[in-house]
Image 1 (tube, helix red, strand yellow):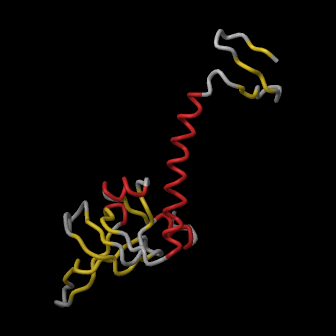
Image 2 (cartoon, rainbow, N blue to C red; image 1 turned 45 degrees about the vertical axis):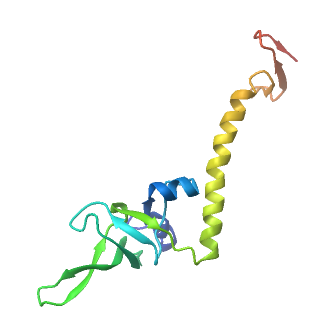
Image 3 (tube, rainbow, N blue to C red; image 1 turned 180 degrees about the vertical axis):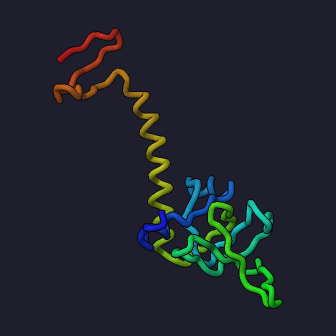
Length: 146
């Protein structure tokens, strides 16, 4: 994980979607981006909300506006948060590519569900015999016809 390339690390920095977003887009999690509104789920800043100001792909950290830590000299800096401890409450959809990602990934989940349903309905229809590569018709009584 520490030796991963930056373009791979970007995908690893992901957070869970809120229940409303999960139902809307058909996904459980999504990569975090600057501008997303999040809620902190664990740690010192639990239940605090804010907008992502910076995503540090090298250190696997996220910085949020309004969540600050005091330094020993009295100045403040943004606290670094782990992405797994965050929940996305509102997505930043300014980027057209992100919309395409949501459409592509959301459709994929819905397609997989419909394929599973169709497979259970096709019990009495043609199946491929994987050992011979030939098609066979299955009858409801269990006998096969070539």
